[in-house]
Image 1 (cartoon, helix red, strand yellow):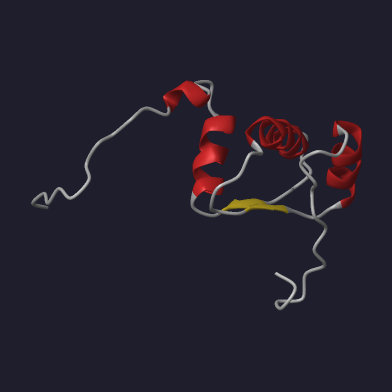
Image 2 (spheres, one colour):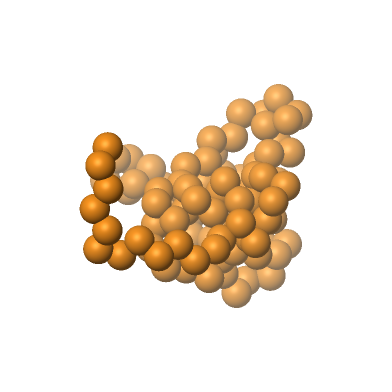
Length: 96
């Protein structure tokens, strides 16, 4: 992101919620990265705030890559995290 010219502001998982929400109010967008992470609860709060901004006419982009995108879909849905369920398809070849 910095290489493309963006100023990166990290949202720290263990910081107080009011600090994170203050940062959100001053940013122009949020990126949820892929890979393993433990930001499910705070990520949901961030997405709710971003959806509120967008619903009120303030364009606020958000991007999720890999697990970040999958998490965004859960946060934005009414289903919640219980949508995750085991799916065993290891070493299976299916025809298209």
